[in-house]
Length: 272
Image 1: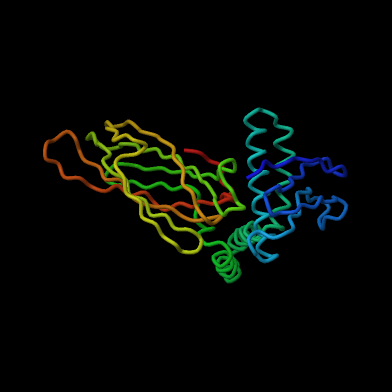
Image 2: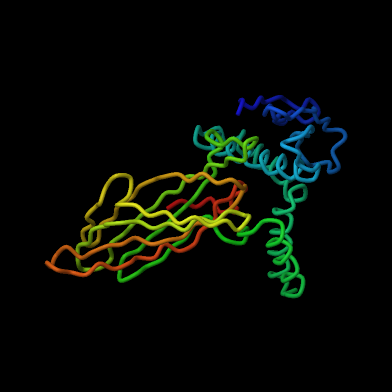
């Protein structure tokens, strides 16, 4: 994928991202023509991506621009450019109306808070239709026999190639041994499901080339990545472990609770 170019919207002096993927023509956005006065201009993508419909291309562009803005905000915050981070944060608010998933999430949250449960059920069903697993958090936390597994996922824009339907997601895992016995991680098993319902089972020895031993009251952390052919999906699985303080111990499985892989994220910026 070719790099994205950043322009400035002269009316509001806010970032405008222009898609340069092969097969996508671009069109600059005039802030004066935006529907909402407070909405920060982003981009309009035209042309054809592999025969996709106009609505599919529009859905892709809005989601991708949102992910890019989130990344820019995180970069600004990490570099302590808080004024820029705040400006981009305000720009992101317009996506609550322009991106269907974000709009429905907002409406669902408001309906629950107002105890309008029939409306909430309708918004939930609409979300499931347009973006499977969008109600699932990009994090999970589960404990089995005193072994706690925490996960957090994130979209990797730099490794993804949306024009080729390749989306990369990182995930960071912390395994904490809250039991009184030392354990060793022997094998991993992942169940990966994309937005089309295609499921893949992945087995392997250890993690990142290691079979770590984890002593009581200590943790082991690692990061890895997963490619997906859709903009969202889900992962879950288990680790096979064994107690190493007694010869002949039987192995046992430690659950990895389901979590989402989402280009849009889940709005929760907490890390593990």
